[in-house]
Image 1 (tube, rainbow, N blue to C red):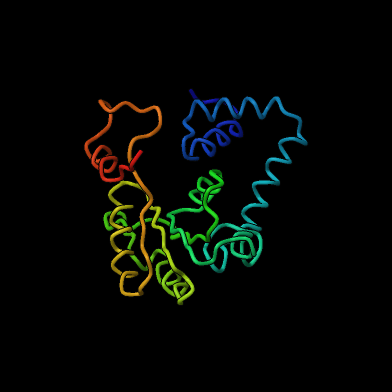
Image 2 (cartoon, rainbow, N blue to C red):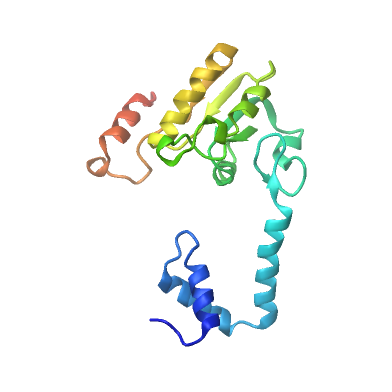
Length: 198
């Protein structure tokens, strides 16, 4: 259903371009925003403009930051001998929420995907290799467990292996609360490979 209001239709169209937002959700958001005070909508638009103007990539790890270097790279409390390699900045947030990892990160900016035209030069691979200057003891590869993530992990392993740095991969397997009968063969294989003593 299209609305006679050009402004509403434009807002719905723009919101529905966001990932995970379909036309119906965009319509609900527009109707919600219409009920809000003008000052609330202005705060939202100001915050969106601010992230585009202020957020940039960390000069060291390519995480998102407002400064030259992110808080993780500049923290004296982080273990500088370990670098966890992830595909995107939101992966850093996910790992940080666990509170378990205390090392540094390196954000590739994606994964190798020849079908989509993403090659090694489109990722921050060279920058990662330049960080492995002798003080790094371990590189943890935490790419996604899909075809692109696995290809990226294998590519990185091939490049890092000659540098005499320990390379590890995050464990993969069954999610907590999952049922064996619904797991695919690759997930079950990884779960068996990553089994631990109890």
